[in-house]
Each structure stands twice: as structure tokens, then as C-alpha cells.
Length: 133
Image (cartoon, rainbow, N blue to C red; front, side, top):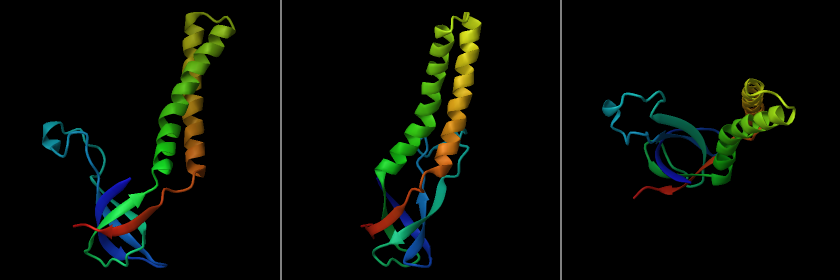
């Protein structure tokens, strides 16, 4: 995955701090929905492969696999546990209320596991691979 950013400062060991504009669901017209709860500007450390200096506009790459894995972990694991909880409740012969309670318990368990496993995952790394044209 590639994005454009601006180098804000140089760090130790051949790394740089890069400011990246985050896309919004409303396409950057936040006045239309006023639902933005996240900062639109992110600052991330990146390996400075092209020796960019502060103020340079650069191309920033990240590993797509790490991002997709994190998204799958956060969004899919609670959903899978939700349905598994309902199936376990039904398999045990619980009434519908019991099955719903088991599915909510599965959702909470899946969410908790996603948080714990997410903390153990290695950090998503970024690399500066070129300059913007």
C-alpha cells in the first residue's frame, strides 16, 4: 500500500518521521457530516531509504499483509466468535434467549482475544521509497 506524505524530521538509524493525510469516509468534506472522530493527520516513523530531508514530499509504502491481517483480526474474530457462541448455545439445547446470551458472550470473548492478539502482533512498518512528482 502506498501513500504520499511529508517528512517532518529525521530520526536515528536511518529513519524519518512522516506526516500522512488520512482519507475520510466523507471524502474530506467533513462539514457535510461532522462525524469525523479521528485525526486526519497521522505521523509515523519510516525507514528513510532515499535519504529524504524534512519538508520533502515522499512516497511511503507499508506492507499490505500486515494491514490486512490486523483488519481481519479486529473485525472478523469477534464476528466468528459471535456466531460460534450462538451455535454452541443451540447445540447445548438452550432456548433462544440462552443462545443470544451465548452469542454475546462469544462476541465479548472474540473482542477480548482480538485485543490481546493485536497487542502481540508486530508493528506495521513503513518505508520511504521515493519522492512525489
